Image (spheres, rainbow, N blue to C red):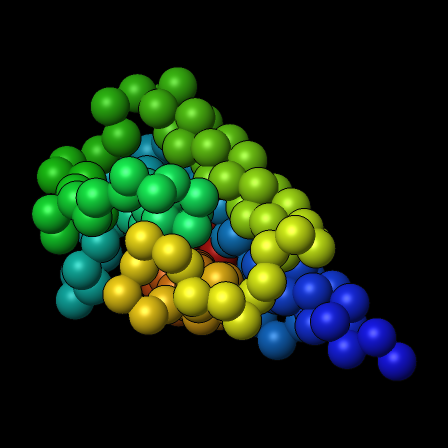
Length: 157
């Protein structure tokens, strides 16, 4: 058995699988415009804030993996300041950008020229494997928050 190939295939699937939980695409499907900027009582974020946070964080990790001139943005960069998306186009663009960046991460996973166990040269000890697991874990956590938010808003079946 080719363990490297098997690991890469599992990691590629991990970035958007739905075996143990809802994936991003299912979680964002059909969210009505009327609730995209609503923060439910006793919860912390609107659907827009969660989707945009997912996008911003995922692309940041991707940039860290690929860009030797990477500079980490300030923490406030990772969350949109407004609960409401600026417009429908921003909503759609955020979702599509997340999907594109997820595909790029999947391409990185299967790129045999990338040693998953190697330290990222411009990092402080992080490996490519660690960053890929981080993005998958982070996405799963916030997608679950999005489902909880949708339930609280009455738009999840």
